[in-house]
Image (cartoon, rainbow, N blue to C red; front, top):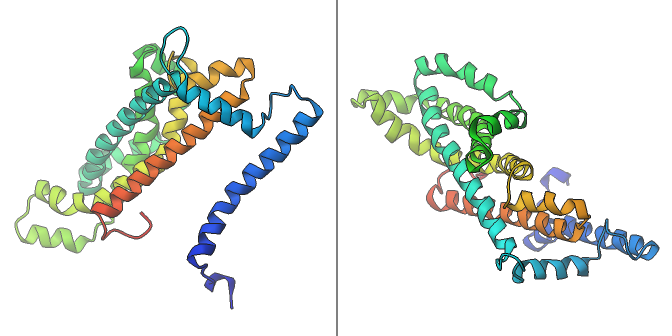
Length: 270
């Protein structure tokens, strides 16, 4: 039997899924043990127990000066910025994706412009955004929008173009206007793709958020990571990195569930 025809059973699939994670944990534990055996004061690879104790302390203990648990305040601040940036990008991307995909005039007018914008490295614009919008919340949100919006527009407009032409012709035959075609024909086809596009843009969005928080912020997950790096507090950094990864996974899982719940007719990969 060829390898391409071998499908794992459910238990084997779960085992194979967990195996890389277990391998990373074991490799880290071995590396930490070797370094700490050579130098007990080594800070580069703290023991897993040290990382766990630090995580418990960060999650449960309040800051002495402010009286707040900074871990949760950092999380809330970053999630607010992320949600606002992604939400604005999704809305604008949906509107322009529909317009470019459905209207040939808009396609000729904006398609190449958006394509050129998507080539600009968003992080290169960060100093400009700080100058124009200041060092507050607005510049961080704008960076996420600037970094994710061109991709969303291009992806969604292409999906609209791929809507079967027969559906649009039938709608016009029944007397539907361009507005009705956009809302009743193209939009339902576009929503599952919008969720998928948002899922794909979450990785870059986290990158832009952490970069902005690291440079100009006094609260947030990225700010805290870059604040403690000067003390080589790898246990704190690893705790925050693991937490960011878990948050990203949970958001992605929620979006995937949303797609399956409300758009079960969409293709299986969404």
